Amino acid sequence: MPRARKGAARRRSKKRIFQRAKGYRSGRSKQWRTAQEAVIRAGATALIGRRQKKRDFRSLWITRVSAACSQRGLNYSRFMCGLKNANVALNRKMLSELAINDPEAFDAVVELARQNAEQAA
Image 1: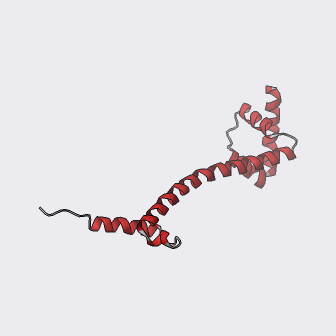
Image 2: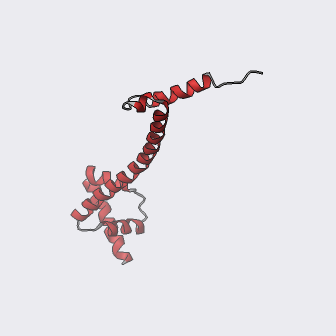
Image 3: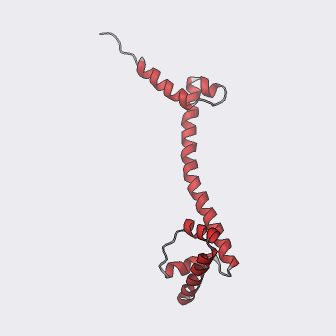
């Protein structure tokens, strides 16, 4: 019985890696081992970046809400405490959008939070 070799499967595998490495500089797109390492590392970095993006956006929303609250004479932690006590289920993204696009509605939310923060204290 003849020895079985990878043949087409190996070619497909290499083709897949080289396709992903397309556009990388020098040996990272031309040499098999280097391209393989580059693609694996790129995938790991992409995963980290997707997680980091979520953190960065949450931080941005908190900064925006905090700035809007301080303009209205209330700090961020009191504001969030007041919202929690009032059972308001608005997330930080929506609060940020309200602060930017609809200041009157955000003023109403701040007043609600202020009343409920004072009751808790």
